Image (cartoon, rainbow, N blue to C red):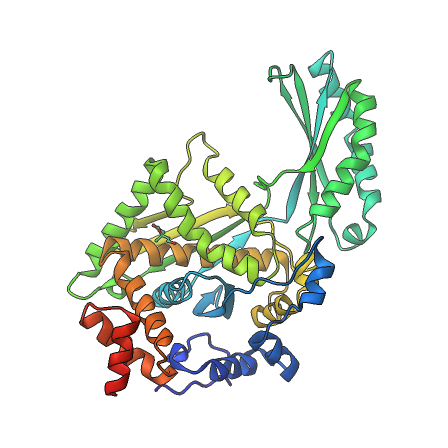
Length: 430
Ligand code: MEV
């Protein structure tokens, strides 16, 4: 078995998956300087039922998910171990494999916009939409100042109002409508509370300025001012797959992407694969994965047709270039990130310094997860990799010890008989 040295902070950990659970935790603990209590939080249920009962109404207990760590990630020349909470067996293995391919091309290069959220105020019963819009825009500075008065802490950290915009809808099922957008930088917070408080605070001023009646005051999950981008280039030689030439794999990955660019039926599945990775990091870090999903899918339909969030194409050197851009309104302070004990340990492992850095890591994870899926689909088919993980689970269910799982699962696959009873038979023979 490969020896693993965590003294150098490289996320390239060959053989990590073959270690026992306790050994894996020990490696990650050394990597992230986790103390005994933090290790215990990882291995045992971090969130107690009593704690959970304080977090939501009518709490009964907790619902645990597997927490794993994806390896091989090199992002902007920095190594990351990426904690992921997910029940689907192949997700962590697949994303780690893709990150290794990307590493061969120098890793991911990422960027993010400032963490600007949009708060919406719906205004009805407006007699003259243009005049009302004009009055609101003339008083932008006062509206922004009123919004900033709500959260001195975010403003102190350099966040707060950035702009006020007005959108007029001449027609709607209930007549003409004005929609006011407050653009608000929430810094390291996801910012739902801050932005909702701010739009509630400025709503009376908007009513006065517009002469209309305010109905909803709420953030938009289409956070298209808060985008993260990840790019990578995979050398064609690294894509060689069994008897398949790397150039053929690259071309077929690009073809798979094109399928999701033109066809919403395929795009939904393609983007679901991206969210397999992003959601798993959201859950592990205590972020709101429903918000992230809503934003991602709405953004994927921004030109009127739902499409792939990614671009994969063969570049001028014959290498495979990949890119993703999507809204990622995630925070590193507040919410479940602060109160969930496991999320706190996860944040220590991830070791990101800002919400925008976390968003960039997630964009890289989404791109890698997508590559893993479409490369598998465009070569051996998805069932091959899934079968391997399924066979491992069957071997475990039959009672295989960690060091037996590889051999037994390989035999199950070779014999095309992936059943617990057969795994037990094989175990008896060893
Ligand atoms: C399965 O969870 C995700 C995939 O269907 C994604 C894809 O088809 O691109 C494999």
